[in-house]
Image: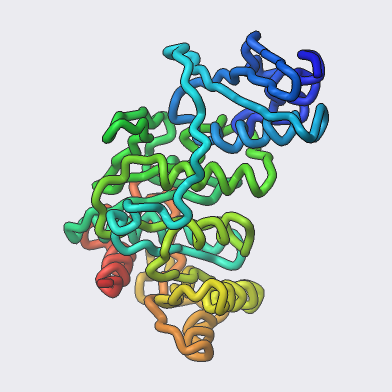
Length: 355
């Protein structure tokens, strides 16, 4: 082996936050050392709490063994632009079930939808706020890798989590807004760039946001899942002992087909996560000037009928109201508004989640 081979192999590894390879990004330090089949080098990250660090390090090790020598023993060190202090990356695996902090996270509830665009993130944001208003300690993880929306919905787009030392460990400090502790991939990537990486890298980033964050003691830990069924869902199920899942759907048949698959995924004997209920979003349209009128644009009671068919609770039916959309876009979810009928609906649903 010789250094140029190592450099060329790392051109096959992309940093998820920018989509550029490690060499193009200037992340390889000029300290490659080779002794027989032993190779060591350092990678430079922006900060110590980089959510992609572990996945990038693993991908770099695999790249050297794939493109240079399958028997290479690869030792990767990390440096950080802010402190430029070196540290050896730990080889110990993440605890498969969240370790001793699993209980500290309280009731862990996944918010899921079979397809995108049904308002899953709106539901997750408002439920988190509603629970916090009721005096509970709430954490919210935005695990929707390709479409993180919580920074926008919580008016925290410009916030950047910092690292903190807890019991000798460097952990990510969640952003706190409206009484909710929150982390999102959106805090760590360019909001104008597409997040493109394979399932393994995404899953490792999610693990780090769970296991390497200072969540503290919580009563409820809500997880805004990406739509569908994928590696990320399996990662979360294996990393956390989920208390239950909520499936969000709209009333039309095309959404109900995917919602049914979501319920089936959680009920699978290998997963076995209780389905706490179904929320039917956009159940009807009510114009502001005619608050008593209901127009069933997407069909009537589709989520209600699905809940009855699958024998799961119908937690609530949320109308399609302009103010809900406006509140989310402005970063002040509707549950923040005292006395608003839609906000009251989310508070009623939250009151059903006494686990």
